[in-house]
Image 1 (cartoon, rainbow, N blue to C red):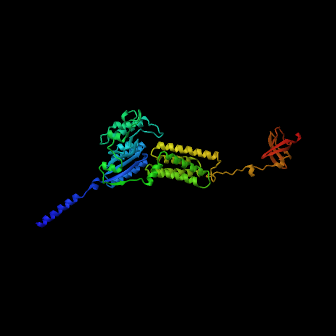
Image 2: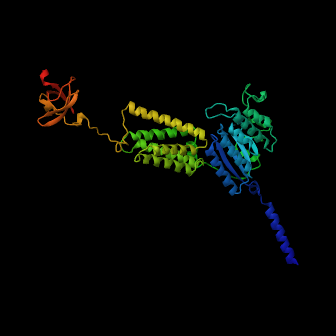
Length: 440
């Protein structure tokens, strides 16, 4: 009996001891700290997709997106927003400086928003590839997306402020820098209109304010490959890279052997496809199509007709366009690179007098000209001054006999009958000119 009581006492003591141990770290769980910086584009999506996947596999409870971006591309922002909506983890947007344009759109898809005292959110008008405001159709779709992003929040955000961020016609004079300007909210203004859950001065203060103090924080960083892919797939870099590739290969065509220009051109093409493959924009089918185009162009050098060359060129262009996120922009980039390449070819030929060395083995360049000692027939100058007899009338051409040899001759203009003596006055290749001997 006493033994049973002793055991019960020990179990009770153990339970009290375990309950007394603090569990703050376990209760706070694991937090993944993911930077969302620079332009919003497809390369960024691949990094965020990897981060979200690792956070889920690691059993994290919360993902904090530290946002500082001037905006970016609508299609990439749409994919990232879908990624945020589909995750079961708690998402927090920490705007440590700017969440403009597509950045504001993504912040609104987070469960909670916290801002640095100097943070800004807004200015979310759609801009096309030329830097101008998008057409009515694209702008209408974007306005609907901004409104839906605000309404999807559980914080009860007024969608009119989201619409004013993308539509300068909406009037919120108390928060606008000037009439006709897009709405951009400061940290205090965002907190006032319920577009922020709080203003924090540091990441540690954010953790404390969001109830995550003591949590295990895992900082995600882009790999070198992801950083390189984001740079390569930037819409400004793509036409530059393709132009370098085109110019490098063109200069190599005018140079003997294979040297630095060709290596630069080939390297630029490798970087282009590498970046787009890593960023998830291109599949191996685009690379295979491009390589098939190169093979057809090489085959065209040995097979006459031109058909293989045309098909090869089309396949190469199609492979490049398929590798990009936006076919229209990729087409513009390809045209830009082609124009620069053609200008390079013209400059090489006109100003530097260069010739294509690649085709030296395929095109016959030797000329059988007179300067080199070649003649099309024997030039019989020894006949000049000798007398022959016409075998046929000369009207003005005909046949004459000289020492048993029949010659095709032509008179200087007048008719000469048969069996007349004629004097050879000129020999020009195979043309023998005669004159009637009696006329002298």
